[in-house]
Length: 235
Image 1 (cartoon, helix red, strand yellow):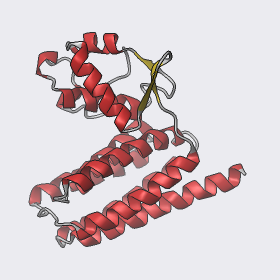
Image 2 (image 1 turned 135 degrees about the horizontal axis):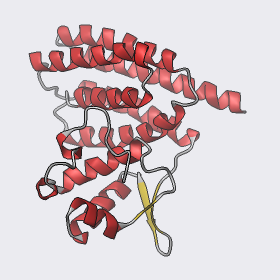
Image 3 (image 1 turned 120 degrees about the vertical axis):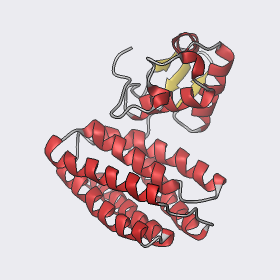
């Protein structure tokens, strides 16, 4: 298959490495990235046997991975039609963003992990990558930066249930948001993200997780407002 690798491919996605070292979680993340980056388009059928052969595992662990993706809402299995990548409409995504904003509030109130110097270095590197997009115009790289930002921010909470639920909703919205990149003002999106990065960097330097959450929630509200505007224009 072609087009599976993404920018700055994590080790678990590098299939030049031995497939025998890939765990169920590695395979799950690899397939989740393919779905969110539209390497697997909505409506595409996924064949359990073919995927098991590709990743060098038996069908039993592959079935477990697919069940997890179905629980996340990224695929759906129906008797007689097989397993397909799900599609999401604008109304559903708006609802997801509302819930994500509530989760940010909950994570702000939960016990936080310490903000370390490594956290700051990772975030500064991410901000530089985002700034480079102003000249590159690479939509795939933009989506990858948002995924990496999510990994940093949602990792600040000690609450595993909150992190897990946040992860599921993030990737449900990421799949749809990547589809919209062809229809929205890319420079504006990069500018919005850079503004968020600047403010979050300051909050991280202050070691203030609640402030980080407040800033991120405001950015989600901006995205939601743009989605509402798109829905109004369509009407």
